[in-house]
Image (cartoon, rainbow, N blue to C red; front, side, top):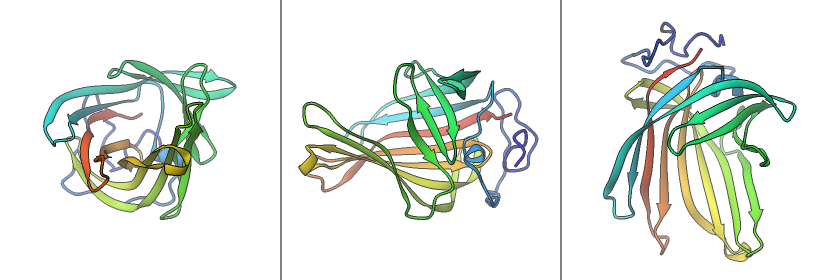
Length: 218
């Protein structure tokens, strides 16, 4: 796939604009991790962020812009420095085989995305047991392809992942959060929906959504 072409065969996006289509295009094959999450200097993605509380009450709606502000060499890896506005932070991204890795300065890198993956395949993002005995385990599961997602930026055919977080004592670890993540080749993250389980674990509630508004991918 050409990096300077947008996935759904429109003209390259211009400043805070995006291609529009009334239908989602078919997913290309094969796809690499570089296609699924393209990174280049001056790429940016603008999102609408919506936060809820556990009572399904809307708390706040805001926007965020994620921008690749620099291509650099970080710990011997060709890396992309991503600037986030909310919360304000900067992270380094780089490709490692089929994985997309992310790290902050002076921190260990973690895989956050992998492709190709088979349906139902699981990747461990993090598995840490702290001195307190609390275990923090985060896995990424590929659930399938061809989910059609409609957001302000357009309609996209997406690859669907679940990020599942387990927390608690090692012998009593239980699911605490689940995220549904939708990625479109040639664009990146289209939508994120985060659920949190109630204390009795009988139901899960939406606590956060992130939807693509516009973008520029070179």
